[in-house]
Length: 87
Figure: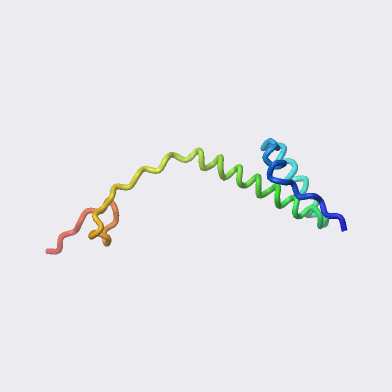
């Protein structure tokens, strides 16, 4: 039984984003029409595409502001909350 060759990481890295998306759609279409050999290739292409999208979305996030340190003995207080006094 001949399996379709799953692309290596180097082969996936050499693809442009648009080409990768077109290949993923084409291979997923073959897999949905019953081509059992296409499932692995479609999965590999889709995983690479999701990783690229995730990485590009993370770059758009603003940097996280550092939290002010709080004394270790005030572990019950949330950062930024004012202490309450019991009267």
